[in-house]
Length: 176
Image 1: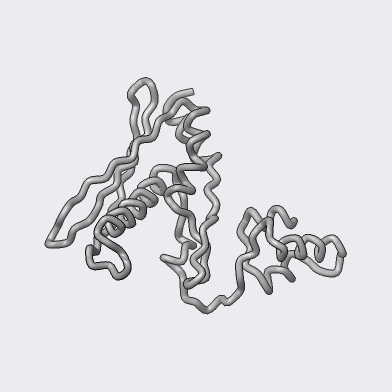
Image 2: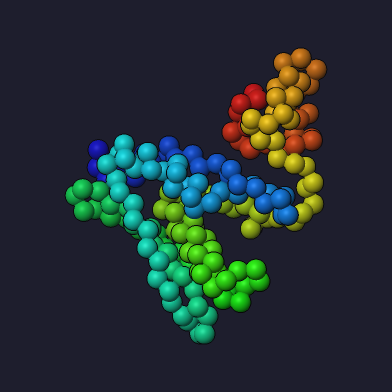
């Protein structure tokens, strides 16, 4: 299998669910760590290595981190993606190290999104209007078990559950 085929296989097989929760904004999201946890076994099984680096830059008086995600194989073939995130050293509730770390994680997450074709357009960053008050139905919860029982009873459907809860594609598949 050539490099392009290996990369495509990882991109197709990668499942990085939004397992983190922002209770204030009432949305689920995936972190850089979530993506890395999901992609490491796929990289290993396809003979690929990932390297992440950060570089601090300044343009027009704005300081930011540029993250670089580089994928390579034993032949030296590479593919890379870059993303940037601003750094606010006066960010409320964070010391300077936390501010840099937060910006690094954010930039790395989006560099990984670009490299592995992870679509975040439905993330709260892009679409959160706070109008949908439904809570997410997460697998392994009491509500999830009740939803399964509801469906088994034959008195309702997945669309009935969607009226009360937001369902990820994964949860929807488990209920179907």
